[in-house]
Length: 238
Image 1 (cartoon, helix red, strand yellow):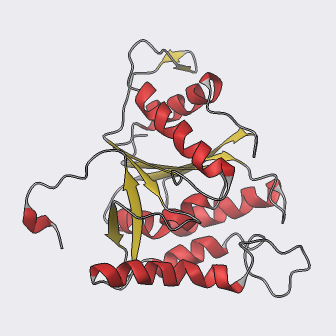
Image 2 (cartoon, rainbow, N blue to C red):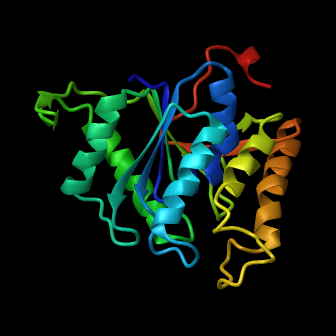
Image 3 (spheres, rainbow, N blue to C red):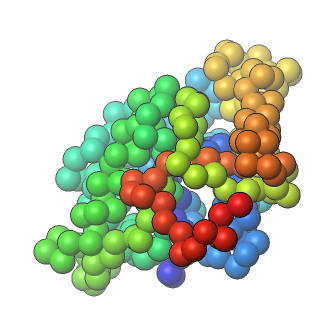
């Protein structure tokens, strides 16, 4: 299956938190979008890996993505090395996306920046003819995405561009709340974490609203780019 957009996250829920509204909007425009989670989030303070699997499946259904896969890398301990790069290269060549979305270039959780660089490096390597990968004993063709963008997570990184996601923030929030074990729940008896507070849950909306305010729309999500952001002509900007 060829996808238009392939979004990677170090953990289940990274993609939803970082760019869930953008994904929902692109799908509404007819784009085929997939999600690949690097780990099962097994080191998360709350819940379990099995529960996160179920929550990720439910969230994917809410967003309407075409496919979701989990690579089963070791949460907290995966590396940006040849072994891990080759697994991601296989995913890129399998789905042949025009655009790849990946973790923030720098963030509070060490897996986010590490996952960001791992996927970015694999995107480049995937375009090299002499790197051979096989799936079911069939040689894959080389493929390099046209663009690699990084969504913004915990830290307030200045975006290189923002996407108007007015009308899609509710679906983003719904997809996040599918991870009921991970976020604000006043009835939960599990330990508190930085993402279980009411303030963090509210920040999903108010951060999008603030970015929207700056560009003159209701809600927006920000991204950083690995190269200059180009437009065909000036009237494409708003």
